Length: 180
Image 1 (tube, rainbow, N blue to C red):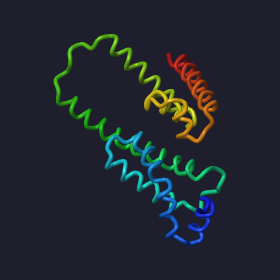
Image 2 (cartoon, rainbow, N blue to C red):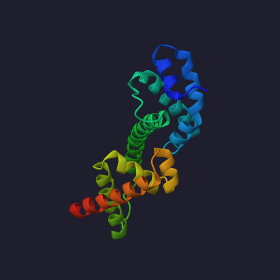
Image 3 (cartoon, rainbow, N blue to C red):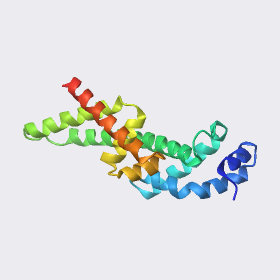
Image 4 (tube, helix red, strand yellow):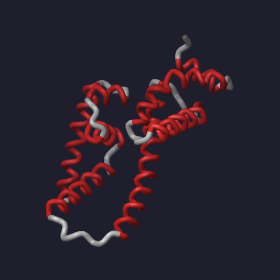
């Protein structure tokens, strides 16, 4: 079986039919990555196809500095995040329209307001963090993955995941402290 860098060179050289072999090798992995960010299987399958299309269109940009699986993961992650942001925008718009149609709720409790304020602070702090920290926070806290699962997903040593998570939490604390 030919190594992946050899396959990529052949694809970049014009042997487009070889791309199918690369897809077969990684389609389950990429589908699993996308499924972590996309709620519905059909959408995950569409997005998985989009990942491979994007990879095919940008095959000449792969420099071989990382594993092919890491490169594909990065494409899958970025497309999934873009999809999630677009979807969140649509859902927020629908939620706003629904909220306008409903009668005003009774006085909300102070606890709920405080929770919303804290969540807004966390979201704001996360938005300003480098991607490497946002990714581990997202996978650990929001996707509830173990250190080992995160290490596998990001192709990192488990100690690197632990260190990034620790540093990300420190940055969150610092930013939350400044925001108050």
